[in-house]
Amino acid sequence: MSNPPRLRLTGIDKAFGATQALRGVDLEVAPGEVHALIGENGAGKSTLMKVLSGEFRPDAGHMEIDGSAYAPADTLDARRCGVAMIHQELSLAPHLSVWENIVLGAEPHRLGWIDRRAARAQARHVLARLEHEHLDLDRPAATFSIAEQQIIEIARSLLTEPRVLVMDEPTSSLTQADTARLFTVVDQLGAQGVSVIYISHFLEEVRRVARRFTVLKDGQKAGTGEVAGTAQAEIVRLMVGRDVQEFYPRRSPCIAEPLLELPTGGLLVRSGEILGIAGLVGAGRTELLRMTFGLDRSPTVRTTPARRWAAGVGFLSENRKEEGLMLPLSIAENTTLTKFPALARWGWLPARVMAGATQPWMESLSIKARDPHQAVGELSGGNQQKVALARLLAHPARVLLLDEPTRGIDVGSKAQIYDLIARLADQGCAVVMVSSYLPELFGMCDRIAVMHRGEVVACRPTAAWTEPTLMTAATGAAA
Ligand SMILES: Nc1ncnc2c1ncn2[C@@H]1O[C@H](COP(=O)(O)OP(=O)(O)OP(=O)(O)O)[C@@H](O)[C@H]1O
Ligand SMILES: [Mg+2]
Image (spheres, rainbow, N blue to C red):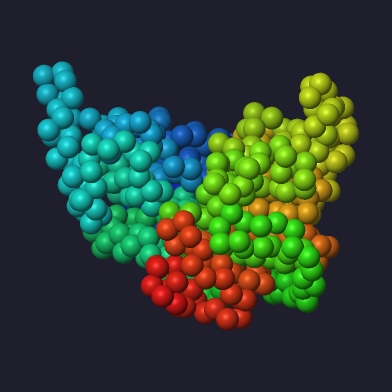
């Protein structure tokens, strides 16, 4: 290469106590290149990007930007050097307005005061670059949809004119239409010379946005190459270390008696059945599950989560951080607290017993951690999601309400989770599964219901749907 690459990382090491998260990792990205960083849950992707964006200091290794040594003191310093990161978990200040969020930490000043007029102009300018200049600058961030919050988050990262922009799983809460819009934005940024590092578990996305890829496995670089010249199966093999073939389990469902009625249109779920719920963001899919579980009030269902739980209904929230997991507690505590409510109420359960009950789940879901006593907050995003699932499945339930059960989960583990869900259905559970990932609904479900504006507009056997007819129904047009 005659010109230096935009970014060159050499021999990066990073350990957290006894966990060696990164081992001698190299990465090179050209100016304007969109580079995909892929790998299993816990492979070290977020850690590597946090080293790059100044959140962690590496234990060893060297970084260069445009040929000059780069060693950020912290994230602000990294932003000044042209590196911005959009985190796996959205990080907007919910009560601050759009413009305040966008300029946060980089506010323009005039005579010692924040120059509101300049700040608003800057905010509008970056939103225009993303074709979202219509967003109301004064509304609090929390009042926007997840997709819009994602745009605000990207706008914020563009404010400091980054030379390198890191996106850690930016589409995990987006619908197809919003994802397509985001890809256009990524294309534009690339064309404007911004180098983008794009983390995703969706290989079809990688194929769409990225030119080159690097695979991490167990903290080491397992391979790198051109996306166009590499077969999907080869990338999966680099990630997982084996072939993943049978992706969706083959089932011959034995559908029996109804176990639960959903509070919309009298939809019944039966024993042995997997019912999928499709719809756009905001269509009311999550609300439907929350009402069914008694978390939100409903005109037709009068129940409480405690009563539902006692009756054998389990619920997996899409928002594992707020409702799902207790991050400072261990994997074992999180997994078993619901299993032994009586004991847990007195605040004491032998650690040995908890660990013993947890170990099988760590194996069947491949939860990557030091041991069952590690705090959930120290796990990678995907592994936290697996703990939330383990906690639900450890409790014997007859009906499972799952909201985006595989969000943030890697390809190999997805196959394992699908197997588990299928096995539970085959044992007589009724499963209701909300997902924004259509291939998963088509691969797993016996019937798919489509929601629009809070109502189920159609429910058919999966074989009676195609992706286009389903999308049409989801937009509210008569299907
Ligand atoms: N603050 C921390 N304390 C202790 N260990 C950590 C911490 N952050 C990350 N780790 C460990 O480092 C390893 C790599 O985690 P990382 O979050 O980088 O994975 P990832 O590739 O981003 O995975 P995912 O796809 O699940 O997001 C994991 O074993 C994780 O448990
Ligand atoms: Mg991560």
